[in-house]
Image 1 (cartoon, helix red, strand yellow):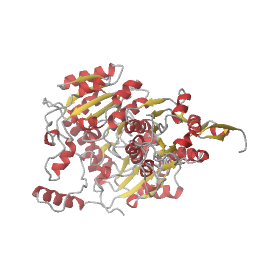
Image 2 (cartoon, rainbow, N blue to C red):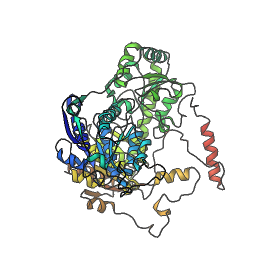
Image 3 (cartoon, helix red, strand yellow):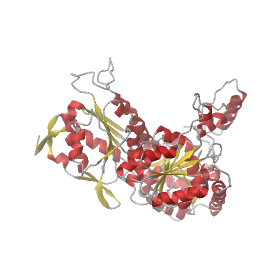
Image 4 (cartoon, rainbow, N blue to C red):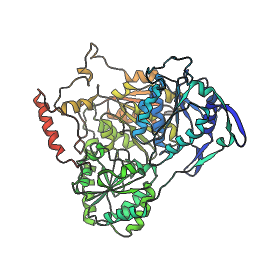
Length: 616
């Protein structure tokens, strides 16, 4: 090789390369990879683990308790930093690797960067079959790590030391690409990780990355501007791309200048403050009827940084059949949906340039006044939901309302699965920009706790509140101890409705009988036994409270804020009191059944589908 070289192992070269990558965060030069979530095993401890220990000050390792959990924390970290920094998640071969596949799916669905590095079997195959190896008789080069191919943007298995000279830069470029962003995976066979190679020293030189901001094509911009100028009733759907381009200020100014109401997706929530005059509420199935009413009347829909998934679109029923879409997105794939006028660009730059083209144009005052009327309906609806009715246990909405009431502009709130996404999406009134994370791309149970650990690690101000149901808590809870162990505090509110109540709601709402969702209707002899969540959380080192009134809940929240470590607040919650969403949702209901209630549900589903917009 030309130039100076250094003879080091593949594992050491990977670590040195990661340490050399830098990025600009809020004007300051920071590590692109600020740390590693890791559980060591025989596939990664002797080589990669050794190198990480040698660089423990530059690239600290945070010990996970479960590989899926720590990788979910890495995903939430990426969301909390608005994709400006990337965590690494490393595991051994076998179950350690496959445990992370679900978390990779979460990162992939949500377009978030995480670097997964798993140990792998020996390239030489001389000791095969090795411990934890799953053998594929007709495909000997296949290992369990191939499972990551369907849930990562970039996938590679390192079978020669020189490969990382190409693979690592490509992995980083993919994770930083605004259009193709997602997780990257490297499989690291045990013999290759330990092998030495003469690497060029230049490979380890410091590189400072800057966020790419693709500008819109002039012709695309002109076409979009003309459609907007012709609109009588435009609306903006703000998605997660607004956060990742840090376009919140530009969105607020654009909406104000042109008198366009803004609704938010789950990923885009907290793009606007709830107090903003253009804010019209959350859209879709977990959105509010008042916000969906605005969208249903729109003749032009500006889809800004959203992938338009079914909970946003009400399975494509919330829009007027003749509505025209303008799709502004860094990902070309998202701009071509539903005959949209495409603008492939960074959201911030697109809004800036679009404003220049639109000039003094704004929507008609009567349209803006209609949106304001619906916003008033939203406020009244939320007030009715969060108000104390004097009945115990409380509803989800009442708990959300109290947390929201006590939250500051710096606090961050997080949830993921079950009934809580709808409750927070509707009833949470944003006080601070980019302070909301509802993982609803993959809707992964367990993200609420692990994700809160990752978010707490990423956030430098305020508290991290996470609301979790008893079902998700039981599925994955060990990162309560991770947060205590690492010293990254979170406030966890455990809402116990004694089962998977929101799925039971779907089950019975579509004509079925309650079965296997609530603890009371599950099979077994222990259906009367309940988990002591307070004792369980305390056993993992958390401070704990169990409340029996809303006043006690308020006191517990205040105590948790003053505490020096993770605090868990346990409360009962009503199993049948959900905030109604504002849109139709298509699910598979049997065409034939012996239950008349199922037949009726199918008829209702078919009727709802008549409003569905063709996907062409």
